[in-house]
Amino acid sequence: MAINAQSSLAATTDIPVSDPDMLRAMGFAPDAGNVYVAAGVDLTGTRVDLESDTSVNRDLAVHPNLFPSGSVDYSPVAPKEFFGRVDTTGTQWRFSSGGSTEISRLGTEAFADAQVEDLPNGGVLQFFRWWWSDNDPSSSMTAFLFEICQPAFAGGAITFTTVATSTSTDTLTGSAAVSTASRPIDTQSCYYLVRVRFDAATALLRFQKARLQFTHP
Image (cartoon, rainbow, N blue to C red; front, side, top):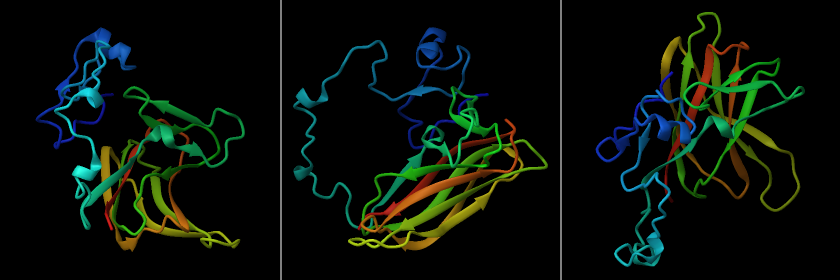
């Protein structure tokens, strides 16, 4: 099965990879499709030292508005970040298809979790989006975004808040977005966790990716 199609934002600059040896070296099948390399990346092993390139100014002080207030940003979560909520046998999960970029359930544990990283404290969540492949007419997957909090400077009970949830539909290339109702981001007291529930142990249900859209404070 091919990797998901290239992002439209990068379609004008990214270059498709078709060389079988190069594909194998990157961990894909030799006939894999929809695999790209970003413009300027040298896959032959030559290292480009951008820090020594005086034409590229990487001092953020020169670009104070790199992320201006209210600007939109994203935080994607890949399947390899997910771990089973409980894994008693060591063989509960399978990464398969498209160069091991999808996760399926094998055992009795139905849930897999991953923490969302790099969210700006004081920003605002806007949307939760996820991608899946659901080829099982009798079962589905459900994704949840949890906000998990404790008091910022003292002991206290852990609270779990469902910020968004969505259930897969029967399609090989599914995607859905759920509004998070402009929820403020609080990384001082909380962290954010994506949980996916697989209603059956089958390779016909495959989780592909999750992503948060947010604005900067």
